[in-house]
Length: 306
Length: 186
Image (cartoon, rainbow over all chains, first blue to last red; front, side):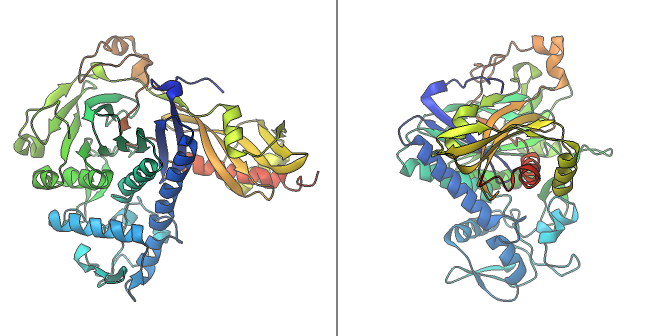
């Protein structure tokens, strides 16, 4: 084993990582008697979100909805209910630009496994308005739907893990699920975002106070006919977004940051009032030919904080 | 892009390649710490590397569908008073941009009991080796605290997909079938 570099916080913190949510989730907290136990519980709650909301796992609650909710209302757990409610609020506020029912298009393009889809591609599918949230935490599809929480559940998991750490008495910490990132207890912190075309290169960004998320097509192959598709579906056209930009959203909570990156990616103009409504701001990185990039801010002031 | 020029009120800020930071390397656990974390009750860890001879390689590649590179797999028996608590298997995976050392803890029946990441290293892109590109690292933006080799704490933007680790764990489970199973009573 080669000795890796120590973080600046070094021995005063505990830093752990586990493979969860299809990425590497990292948690770092101030070192204390209970810090290992607190991190363990935070990873557990992230694993629970994965078990409930994974599109890939046929045993998840989400897969059960996709299989059964067209036939009969299906009762779901509190975490899944919270995410579905938050998704609905975002769909209303974005006039349908945020929509968790576009998973079929992702399956068709190979971004999600076909094994997890239970409706035929030809079925007359509905949209978010046909996903009904009934009393008793029951969910019903009024039309054939295929839902995926990939654009929001990761941020939710980060928020839950943050709550668990705080409840365990952790005063300062960080949870990072592949770029869905939340910090607490330390005041503004330095933030870097991966270069859209060179994931190993980091671009400095304005400081981070709470939560941030970034969406980009980092690992998509580059097409011969222009930018490669990014796994974000435009609900009004059914087409995948294309581009080499990355979108970073700062918000008070990671779930809204996660979801809002998709809306900004699809339509920055329509996203602008929505960002304000969620107390969020966005920065778009457009790669430049020389290897640098150009930053576009949704609100004035490059050094302003979220 | 047009949608940004037209709608975003703030003039674009250009970040030269200059201020970009280099790739990351993090050590989460030493070998000793990882063994302790995954088997807190073990009194001893007995080294039991598995030689990956041709028969075993065939079996493992067959079970897991993953190709093997190494000739030995580092494995430890976690024991208390000679009683087997489980197996600690050390493994490495390579992605397009990263290199990860991780450990899988198996119980005596071969079920996964835990996974911990030990080392995460991002490989540098070709441009980092380029002298002229490196010379640009005289960056100054947003606090300009970056130095080559300095650790950056908060990074947004996707890292690896877990695909390689998932494949690696599948390979470790196959290794159990091929080489460790049936050792519980020894």
